[in-house]
Length: 334
Image 1: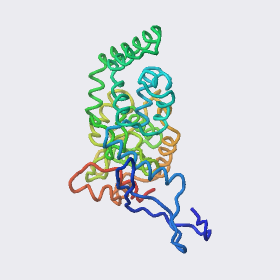
Image 2: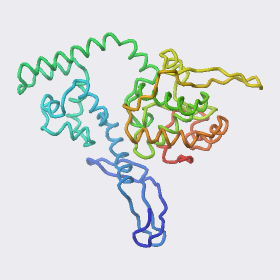
Image 3: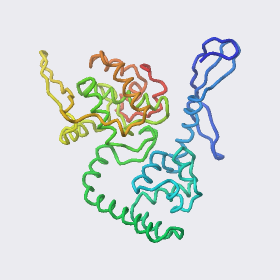
Image 4: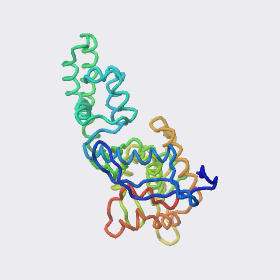
């Protein structure tokens, strides 16, 4: 960004600052450009979003307030419009749509939204809604009952996926996303299609994709937690995660023997199993492409060395700790 005063390129500065929201103070990594000649500080819209999103994310985490993608998911699974969801919950006509767009719910409204994620509680809310006619009540209740039946049929599979990714709410260690096994699977399919990476390299590709997305938006793609181990950052529980994907016929893993006696597991796409872009945003797709292109010609050993330059790895490797996504702001590769 060029200085509006001198016309010269300005340096991007990141420093810890306190920001207030709803009578509370939160510490964030504040981003701004500094004009070296005048000493003036400037921001633009992307930096303003990164700064305010850090505050919002901490507030949501503190009070267990669902994030916009969760608010949207809850409504869509019942097949309702935002207006009808607002009506059932007793909100103003446009309130639910505004929450989906990023406006912060009150703590009380957040609890109501979370309650309706349970189809049984949703049925209770529909029955209590006096403005709905009997036909609509029956329609919405039948939809919720179908979801309950589906939930009961798929309980083992859902519980197993939760076990693999960790049954935790969105926080700084998940990039303020709830773990999404489907998105992680498609990320693996994407990199398998484009790069045929060995497992160690794939782990770094996933790390860089999630952390690069967080760097620009304050949200990860997959909601996965990453751990620092000797070979660099890896998704927590990655061995079991990849085994599940293989058994589910999402990817193929071929074992290669090298002259030095070592073996490597290379990820290949399965014929007929194509990457599904529909569950990703445009920015998420763009981020996957940036990472794939950046490391296309980089060997496994080289990407390990590059990941060892990251503070995310340096500060957590000794104790094999889960990595905070805040380290995304210090990444050396992007």
